[in-house]
Image 1 (cartoon, one colour):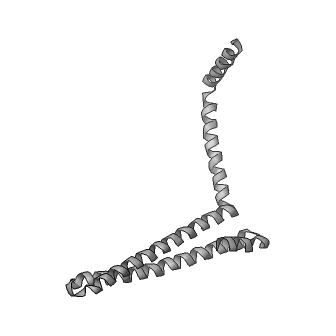
Image 2 (cartoon, one colour):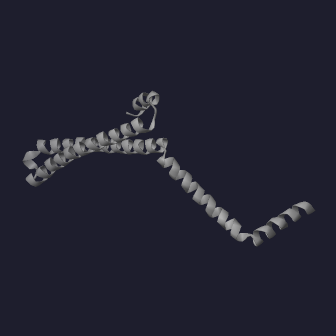
Image 3 (cartoon, helix red, strand yellow):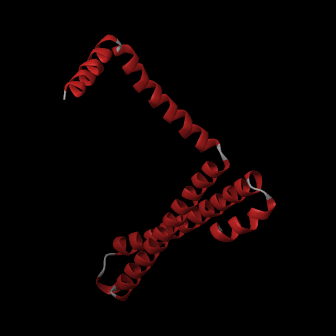
Length: 140
């Protein structure tokens, strides 16, 4: 029991005498983790992961735009069936919503194509030829 008390007292005294060392070691650990994270982001795998995340986000936006277009078309069709009792302004707004959703489909389709190209470029630049086909088949 005395040895445990001696070690804890010694550790406490050591920390009290070298508090700046303890604080700087915490900062050094944080800086080291940040540097390692930046090195990962600059590596081939990090760039691939970032471009893959961009591609998945663009595909999600494209799917959301397709859903929005389908909803707008259904609403327009419903309003056109009731054209005799619907205000022309509401019918025109529904038609504009369909046109906007169609434009959004085009925009998100372009985003997907751009994200695929960027992913393809990273695969070609950062990975050897024997892995390129595997990565393209897996992600594109």
